Length: 364
Image 1 (cartoon, rainbow, N blue to C red):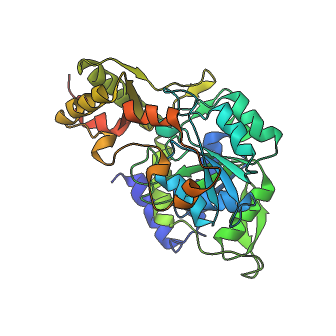
Image 2 (image 1 turned 30 degrees about the vertical axis):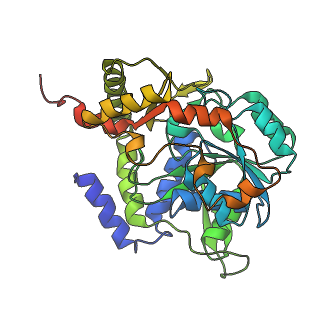
C-alpha cells in the first residue's frame, strides 16, 4: 500500500467511515468530474445505484422498464427489486450491444417508465434512432455503465442519459470493493437519490455537492450509503488515473495479440463512431459460429486467461430464471434472436485478465 492510499484510509477512519464522511463527498465530486456531470452521488453498490436511478425517475411497482437483453442479470434484478417488469430489447446486430430501433418501437407500446441501456464490456453502439424514440416519448434514459467507467463519447454521456450508473465493485476498472455511483445533470433527480439513499432526508446544496439534511423519513428512504473506506481506496486510484488508463491500454494490446494468435476468425464487437474512449472493461471477439467461439474460449483459457464462459454461460438476460418468469409469460413477451446470435458466438474477457501476461514493466 502506498503512502497516499494509507493516508486516505486513515482520514476515512478518522471521519467515522460512514457514507456521510467527507471522503465520500470528495469522491462524488471526482466521479462527476470524470464524466462531466453536474452531480455525483455515491451508493452502496452498482445495483443500489441502478435501483436509486429507477426510483428517482419515477419507476414504481408494476411498471414496465425497457432494458437491453444483453445486459447482465444484475441489471434486470435492479428492475425487479423496485417491483417493475423488464421488457427485453433485442440487439441492433449480431455484432452490437446496442438496442434495435424496431425493438425500441415495440417496447414503447408497453408504455415503459424508463429504459436502461447497457454498454456491455465497455462497448457503446446505441443507435440514434432507438435512443431518439425514447427521448421523443419522454422516457427517462438510464445508462448502466457498470462495465464502462471510462466511456467517452463526442458529446457528454450525461447529456444523452438522465442518469449514468457506475459500479465500483472489485472486478471493475475503478474499485472500492463494493460501491457505486449515480451521475446526472438533473438536480431534481439527484435530490431524489439523496433522499432515497439517506433514510428519507432532504438534500441541500453545498457548493458542487448535495448533502442530506433535516429529519429522517420526510419521504421514503433507506440506507444505501457507501462505506468511506472503499471511497478512500477509489480516490487513490483516481489520483493515478493516467497510469490506470495506460495499464488497461497495454492489457488490451496483449488481449488482441492473444486472440489473433489463437488462429480463429473473429470480429470485435461493434462500437459507435461517436466513441472517443472505450469503456475500459473488456474485449469481445465475435466468431463465425458457436463452435469456433467455444474453441477460442478453450484456447484462451489454456493460456491462463479468464474467459467469460468460464464463469457462466453468456446468454441474454431473460435466460436467468425464475426471476424474469413474469416478463416471459407476459402476452407482450418476445425473444431476442439477434441478441441470442451474438451471445452464442461471443468470447468476452476482462482487460485485467490479460494483465498477468504483460511483460514486467521493469524488464528490458
